[in-house]
Every structure is written in structure tokens, then in C-alpha cells.
Image (tube, rainbow, N blue to C red; front, side, top):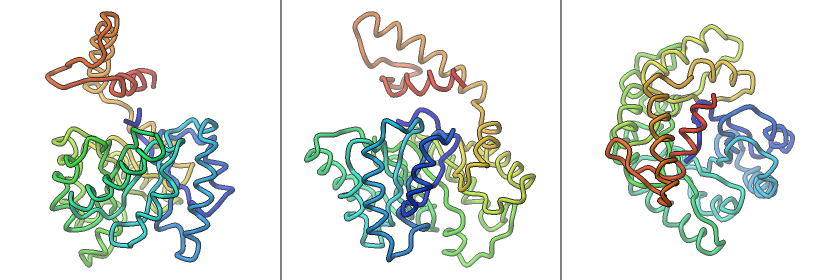
Length: 283
């Protein structure tokens, strides 16, 4: 489980300079991208660059995820064969329409983990279509690997034939509201979609505030300048801080007794939850 989810910063996988710069970003999660930001003719190059970058994982302070191509692209298996290695924390799967699609991908990840003697690869399915919205609870609850649902607004609007309106597009209201509800019901968090207009800073602030009010834990980010604002607005709430204190207290008592996993509010808590709780309290 990623420790914090306030900022998910996408970094083009075919740009070695940006991949190098990502080492020093103050983000919670950096996500090397193989999908939208990489032209088809650059996919192979991007895989190689990301593979090499992951070998330098100890130089990165944020959690490191990689966004593959979509299940429908036919490129996911090739992506996974290159990126599933030591140094990666998790994978963002774009345009997930069903739990069945995700389970097929998870099977491939499990096989690669076994072959390469690694474990613990996390998943973040991205919900970007009408079908994905309809199935988002089933998707969110389909695997124990899942940390979060990511909301992708632009592909959703395109799928529904709705024109984008900056701020809070009325055509996407239901979908934007539903994703954090489904995520919470499944016991994971939700990460809001990107804000595209880098010059409209006041609009960006308002959009972050709307996302926070809907229950999103963080926001997808396309430029480093957006990170500070996102972290300020998506600061842990009082209930989250109370949860973190309780988890730390109970887990630390449990480990002193020589035990590992324990129960907090009827839910199983282990080391990954403890680390996230500690991270929340250190903000």
C-alpha cells in the first residue's frame, strides 16, 4: 500500500530528462507513463527507459508506479514484462471496464512476480468509461492488491460524447461523485482526475476543493507546480488522523507482544496500514 495518495504525478516514460527529474519531486507517488503521453512509435523506447530507471529506485523518495497501456490496446502484457521488477511499487491500469479485465492482468503480474522472486506489486485501476463507472465497485473490490481507484475525466467524457466544460463539467458529475463512494465501500481510496489548464491557478484550487469535498484522497497531477497546492488541500481530515493514531497505538502494542497483524474497528491491520498511518501523522 502506498503511504499517501495526495499527489499522483504522471511522468512521460519516453523522456529521460523528466524521469531523472522525478527523483527529486516532493510528490507522494510518481507514475511513469507508457500510455497517453507516449506516441505509439515511442512505446518500446519508453519501456526500456523506465526499466532502466526502476533499477535506480533507491534514488527516488516518492512511491513509484507505472501506467501501462489499456487492456483493450493489446500492449499490457508487453508492458508488464518490462516493468515488473525490483524497484516498482505498483501499476496504474488505465481504462479498466470490468473486474474480469483486471483479474487477467493480475494473473500476469503474479506469474512475473514468481519468476523474478519479487512480491507486493500494488494496483490502481483507472476508471475512464461509462462501463467502468457502472462496474467501479466490482473493480475496486476485485483484488487485495488495489490501493486506489483513479478517476479519468477526459476519456470518460469522450466515451459519452460530452464536451468538456472547465471547472465542474455537469455531464461528469454523477461519475465523479460515484468513484469515491465505490472506492470507500471497497475499502480503498480514490484519486481525482487531472486539471489541464496550468495557467488557471484559481480554477485549479477550486477543482481540488471540490474533489476533496467529494471524498477523494488526492489528485492526479501533470506538472510539478501543482503538487504544493494539492498537498495543502488534500491534507488528512480529523477522522483520518484519529484513525491513524488508533492504528499506530494498537499495532505498536501488538508488535510488542510479538504479534504482527491485528484488528482495528473490525478490520485487519498489518504493517502496510501501520506505515500509512505513520505517514499521515508525519504530514
